[in-house]
Image 1 (cartoon, one colour):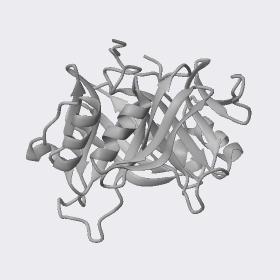
Image 2: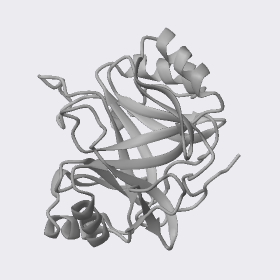
Image 3: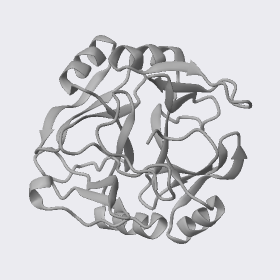
Image 4: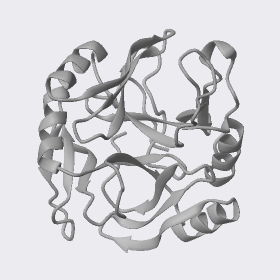
Length: 268
């Protein structure tokens, strides 16, 4: 199993977490779908659940709440957040602000685990920043049930490319995969760590966003299992240049993709 030890290189997607109205329901859904293990955490962590696969962390799940611990009203939509690794959250926040980004959640220490912040890019796509201390991020990638790819869908790929390159050591580059014309890859030290595409083919009204892709062996089987668990199919299984994939919304509305991939993959 591809295991990751030590910090991710700056600019690399390193972690994902899910904010939902019903935390236990989400834990149960992803346990049954991907084989994750997790439980609601202690009060000092806000109940944050670190879910694992074969003993290694793969994703976080938390209940939607205000900074003071109260329940939001209205309740925000359930959403997966992609975190990009950084060597210094505060410096990256300053660069992101200079490049037109907006701080959604200011920099904060997470015990001895690391330092984090949440940012919206100039087109409105929200992402997290993670400066690792004792916790590097996902400990397993590219295996069934684990993260395999992260992708930005946006209204302006040129502007997004300039923003992320200014805030982090990420370089946008047109994909050289046959059949992937018009697709952009994010490079860190010359290696693809994620992707970017326009919203032209998305349903009307779809906002800019980062999408998390989870590796599976059998896309059709996973989609069928998700439907039995009350998930919605936003894009039924289809074959494309990187493999066979589908787009789902979990029972609380959080959108994610599953893929039986040939390439590309999340760096281990």
